[in-house]
Image 1 (spheres, rainbow, N blue to C red):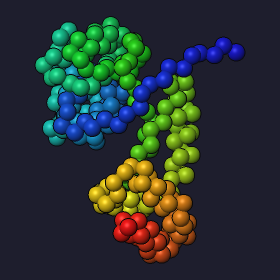
Image 2 (image 1 turned 180 degrees about the vertical axis):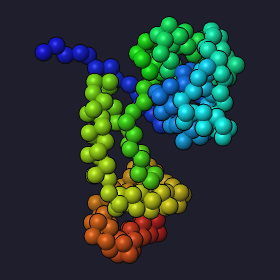
Image 3 (image 1 turned 135 degrees about the horizontal axis):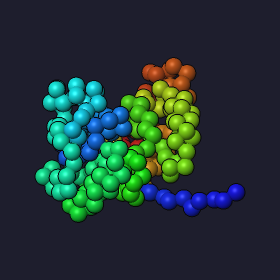
Image 4 (image 1 turned 90 degrees about the vertical axis):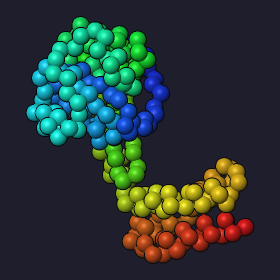
Length: 221
C-alpha cells in the first residue's frame, strides 16, 4: 500500500472577536463557515450574488455584511480581513481569492482544494469552557467524527466542574505562587487527589472541600 506523507499544521486557538473575516461564496459550505465565525464574534462579510437561506436570515438581522455581487480581483483589500474563505463553485475564482488574500497578508482557506490553504478547520467539541479540536490532516473526516464522539463520552461532568474551579483560583494562585514549576506541582497534586472521583460519585461538597484544602494548604505557605 502506498503511504502519503502527512503534512502537519500548527494548531492554535484564534481570538476573532470584532476582527474582519471574509467568505466568498454563499452556498451550504459558506453557510457553515459563516455560522462558526459569527459564533466566535467575528465581523463577517459575505461576497456572493446569491445567499443560502440561513445566510439571508443572518443578513436580515445585520449579523453579517452582504456584498451582493460576483467576486472581482482586488475586492478583499477594502475589508482588510485576517481570515478569508474561498467557498465558491469556481476553481478559477477560488484561486483568485487566494492570490488576493495573500497579497494583503490574510490567511486563506479554499474549501474545494483549488489551492494550498493556509489553514483548515478542525472537528470541534465544545463542552462549557473545554474546547477540543480534532484533525486527521485531511486523511479521514469520518475518523475525525468518530474520535469526536469518543472524546465527548470521555469528558464527563466532573472534568467540566473541576475546570471551572481551577479557573476561579488561577489568578490567586499566580499571585501567591511565584514560579510556574511550583504552580504546576499544585495543579498536579489536585489532579492526583480524590477530587475527580468524588465529583464522579456525586459528592460535590466533599470534592469542593478537598479542592479548597489542597489549594489553601499551598498558598498559605
